[in-house]
Length: 135
Image (cartoon, rainbow, N blue to C red; front, side, top):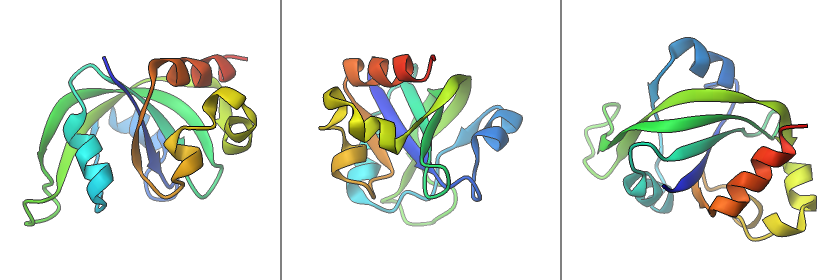
């Protein structure tokens, strides 16, 4: 299993809305590196849901429920989506500040490539963020 982090601006698509919907396709990715990350996602992979711009917090866990397919919001075949479903909210949101302060998370893309919207995480990085959000 692989681990990922996806970013969404809460005013565009929030964790609360995601939970109300129960499932969504992750669209709007227009960066080749993020697109390639979507293509690498496999059914059952776990995904951290991060609120960007407002809040700047990891707020929940999702899972990949359908692997990549053509983005239905564009006719351009270069762009893809995956389907995600919520798993659970973190007990406490984990802020970008907390992540940056954690030595073991210094190499994650959230810290190194702030604008990347879909990024891989190592299992231990994913677990560390979960641990930080369980307090």
